Image 1 (cartoon, one colour):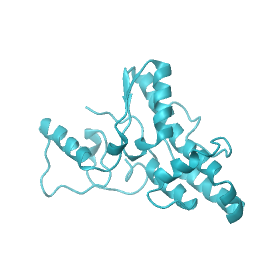
Image 2 (cartoon, rainbow, N blue to C red; image 1 turned 180 degrees about the horizontal axis):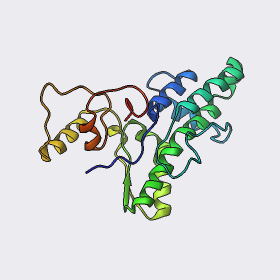
Image 3 (tube, rainbow, N blue to C red; image 1 turned 90 degrees about the horizontal axis):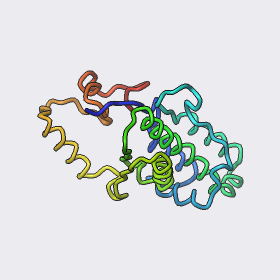
Amino acid sequence: APQLLGQTLDDAAGEAIDKGARLLGIPYPGGPGLEALARDGDPTAFDFPVGLRGRGPGLDFSYAGVKTALLYVVRDLGEEGTTARRADLAASYQEAIVRPLADRLMRAAEIHGVPAVSIGGGVAANGRLRHLVEEGAASRGLRVAIPDRSLCTDNAAMIALAGAERLALGLASGLDAAARPRWPLDEAAALADPTHKPGRKGAKA
C-alpha cells in the first residue's frame, strides 16, 4: 500500500510555479512558459530560499517562502529591472521549486532502499525536474520511470487508472462520498480524514 513520506506544508509545487509565473507576466498555466523563459536564464543568479532546507532528515517541503521572496525581488527591481532580468528570475525561481522535489525523492529512495523511482503530476512535465531526477537516479544506480509529458497533467487516463486500481483492491465509494480536491496518497490518511480541510497539512495533504 502507498505510504506517505513527505508533503508540502503550504503551497503545492504546481501552485507555486503558477503564482511565480504570474508575477513574471507569464499567462496561466505558468509551467510551460516559466520553463521556456528559464532556458535562457542563470539558475544561480538569484539565491531564493528553499523551504525546510537544513532542517533535519524530514521529507516535507514548503514553497510559501520562495513565492514571497520572488514577490519582493520583483518589487525591488521595478518593472524595468524585472523585464531585464526575467530569464534569470525564471531560472532561479524554477530551480528553487524543482530541486527540493528531486533532492527529497533521492533521499527517500536512499532511506527506504528502493531500486526505482518515478514522478507524476503536472510538475513532472518540467524538463529541469526530469533532468534532476534522471541525473540523481543515474548517480545512485536507480531505475527511473517518468511518464510522457502528455500524461503529466489532469487527464482521463490518470483518473481512470486510479479508479481501476482502487476497484481491483475492492475499494469503492458511494455517491454520497465527500468531495476532496486533493486526496492523500496513502489510504490510511484518506480513510481517517475523508473531508477537505484548510490549513497546515490539510488541503494540500
